[in-house]
Image: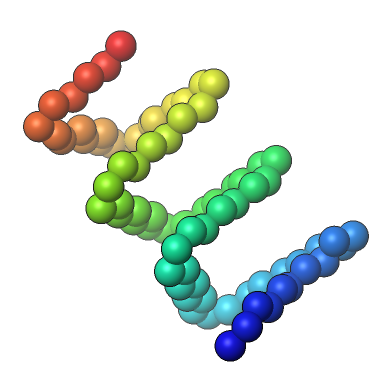
Length: 75
């Protein structure tokens, strides 16, 4: 019913599971020097603003890239 903390401040923390569900009611904040994710399918949905920003950003696909919106601004 209170707070919980899981940390490995001077080592490595590994989590392994067949299924992992994380539910956050207010805010989720991730801070890292590098994040590398690999998956077969990645689906993200936002009810409000969804933003991807970087000094350099690449979007690549082997077959198809689709952009759909009422208004699309580039440049």
